[in-house]
Length: 405
Image 1 (cartoon, rainbow, N blue to C red):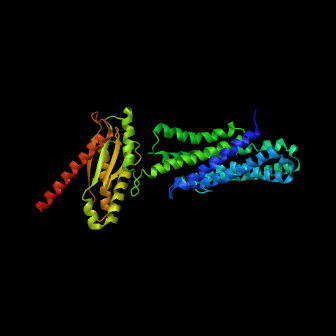
Image 2 (image 1 turned 180 degrees about the vertical axis):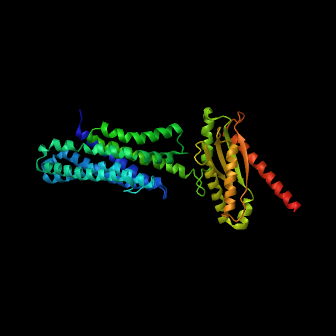
Image 3 (image 1 turned 90 degrees about the vertical axis):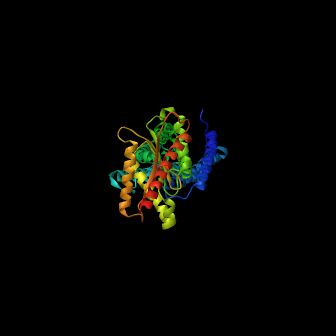
């Protein structure tokens, strides 16, 4: 049998735990202009406000169970207003998430397009309707607690209906958000798919299948978990991404290759590594300065990104200094040779643009996966060796040109 006193006690402990989780996320967040950081930062403030409201409402309920405070009109006023505000925050949460994702992920403001305008109108209408019903219920509770209208209370069914609509409206933005966060993260592909589906589907299902009273902690806890997961993945990405170019760093490359070698199904002769090294990069720094050197690294990384385009089986990394690595699974329509040709075309376009005060050239070393590679270190070492062979050939040809000149 349901025991309100036990429920309130457990709810109080649960909300306190969630609040400290939110405080921990906020204190550990990194200052960043990334969309994920902005979304989570704004969401945390909302969830903290909601946590405080639920805590106060639950605590008031516990006091009433212990001291029968419902007999006092002042208590009923505070309890009724707190309950109405708590319900409104719960109702607003999915719409707030929709506006955040629309702004930072979709790049669309509050009144952009018909869809956003209609959803805003629905939110405004439901908000007015909610406060009319909530105000009437609070007044009835203040006058005569035992005579609160069940008809009016049942009209609040519009709250979960509107919540479902708002959550459904979030699906596209939430998918883009989660895909961006989880791409090349520590999560395996099955785990990433599960996390994405969980946070897209669970809020939608939790609304209709949960009793209205239990709806508050379920949706609240899902969004707290969402913020927590995003923070963990974002922090991991922050230490796995090269700060200058935005590409994956060597640590992430090792983790990516290790994961491939742990799954035999991922290893076949279509798997290739390309090592790329900028020719005469030391001379660039010595002649033009480190600012031009940094710009050179950024420009080459942009060439790599443009060449990779929307390829799903392509992993880019700044390996060290002026060395870059591409892990590519070729297919019938796009081979390693296609990639190298397209990369050279991008470099030629860069050189013709005059963006750099010199002509950029690179040495490439490529290796195709063979069964003789027992681990990813051997695979990497072979590609690195092939690149240095090409680099030595480049130096020899340059030396010959100078001698002939």
